[in-house]
Image (tube, rainbow, N blue to C red):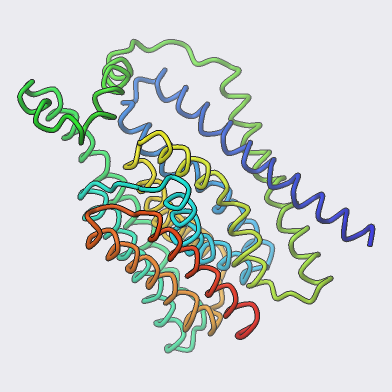
Length: 349
């Protein structure tokens, strides 16, 4: 009994350490980048894309390197299902409405679908060629696609800023759509024009602390989760799909919900769909370069298709509901996740 309580305490503490370490790491990377004269546009895109997904990536990587490959893949797939159905469902239900820009659907939403299809494509290839794992070629393709997507995001944001600065007429005509961009424009200009200064030793120390904290926190997180799974007879895949995926997605939930409550709807949707792409292309793509990650049949035939289905359903709901998610949509998405969890844990385990 005391052993179980101890493991639960370790699980919670390590989860908090991982989230805080990711926050420290990203904040100080941004600070050093600004000192080096790197555009705030690039820093903003990379920090937003990577920052909230570092806990999932770290957990998946440590799990895979430690031999808990089923748990590692489970963290990624489970996190994506939770991000779309759980986080957007909770956000829409509490906020009442989440408005979506067409660009978020045509760019980030489409990329999330493509990313899911890439993953399931390489999973099917590995299964039917009897390799029973995602190939190194698949890993290279995933990482390359993410780099291309990141490059596309940077160019797209740079183009938006030029449009914002071009004429007052354009700004007025798109005032509501680009309100957030206008507010942060001075920061972009300041970052680009700022003269280089010396890098603070404190920032370097904090980056190192963040990396060490992530490594230790993820190691303890996987250890405690694995021990609890063994104690209760829970399969590693289930632990990764639900316990770790929901726990490591707390940053996405906080950012998405707080953004929606403040009316910054594009940030809400962008955080979720951006995390889907990062979790798959980097969260699975990088570990596959280092170790063979076996393909579990149930993940191939059930979990991955559910991930694609809920992402596609969400995009369809948004498109045919006036480019928004309302409270009813949120309740539907939460119900979808509860049904998935019931089928996966009770029926198909």
